[in-house]
Amino acid sequence: MLEPKDAPAAAATTSADAAVALKRVLIAEDDEETNDCLVQALVENGFEVASARDGSAALRYLDDARFDAVVLDLVMPGAGGMSVMDEIQKRGLATPVIVISNYLGALDRQRYVRFGAARVFSKPFSFDELVAAVRQVTGAA
Image (cartoon, rainbow, N blue to C red; front, side, top):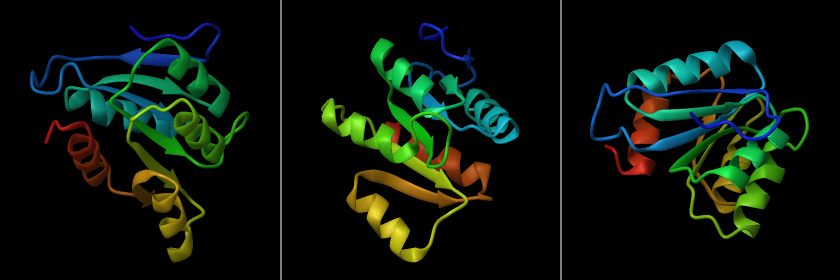
């Protein structure tokens, strides 16, 4: 179970799919319902999942563990999503980031991709499409 020091988070894993059983995904999403649904969808698809409800907790996870992908909300308490993306780049991590947000226009999508996002999803989004994107960026497709 992945838990950073003092982070309000949950971690879960399942052996449903041996091909992705070792793929770790960090979810950073402050909306409890969306976070819980993301955890459930990814766990049901065989991923090991760590969950943070704010950007500061996400950064603590990144201090303590290696992840194969990060699903990142842009607007969160603590460090925002752009700060987390910036920190991932500063640390030289090759971790793919999938951005999710309520606040996206066409120009925003291009900006986040230029900033390093592997994929960008507007809320509401299809959980099946997001799981497929996580599979793709982690090589578990």
